[in-house]
Length: 320
Image 1 (cartoon, rainbow, N blue to C red):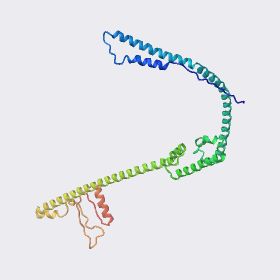
Image 2: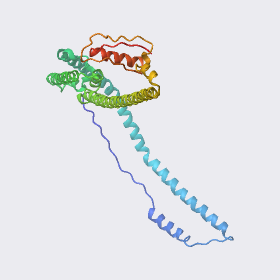
Image 3: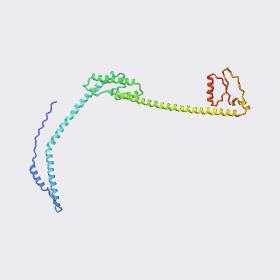
Image 4: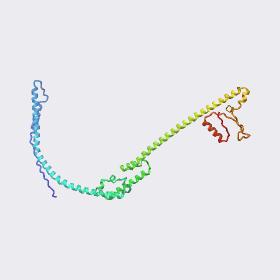
């Protein structure tokens, strides 16, 4: 296309104004008002002076606006003409630019297909962890970005993903799935590992607190068992003391009875009126036949008899 030549000739104009003359006259006029004092009687004169000054100010301002408007007429016409010229140029610019953009979009689409093909060749089993859309870089579509660079960058992404996923799986954490989700979302190994580390720290703290609680509970149970054992011991001592007192009282009663009655009471009271087999089995020269009076619960009697049986003592139980 032939280069268009734009020629603009500007002839500076002039505006004639007797500024100096008007400026001096205005200074002289305004000097009359400096220090002027008006009274109630001269109030109307003051109003007239103010009205006159306002008219003068308005005349000056209107003259300025009218002169500027007249001065700007050729400039406004020039500006309108230039706008019309640029508007005509916009149409072919848009037409050509649309075609250029279409060419670029087509090339980018073709480049994106190439990128996807490279991704499919390299990704292997990392596809679920590293989606193409997640790692795609718009600069890969540029003509200035080589296929070699694209292949290297995708390979780096896949290598990093494999290292990260292997590290997460090796930790064997209950938060494994969440850590993988964080990596897929952020592509940050540090953030993914932090998920597991934070969980494991919290878990360890919980286990420590649970172990402390278990120890405290065990201590309370042990103290309760000790207290129960002591209570049973005190109760057993009290029962033994009671039995001793009863035996002592019975012996005292036997001593106080007449001789003939004492002969009758030589055997324990709980055997009186019953036949006693003096010929117990396994009688040896060093064995003795004795009688105990035992006051105990059924459970305690079972334990006594179990003890006798365990050491081979023959016994016969007669309930009073």
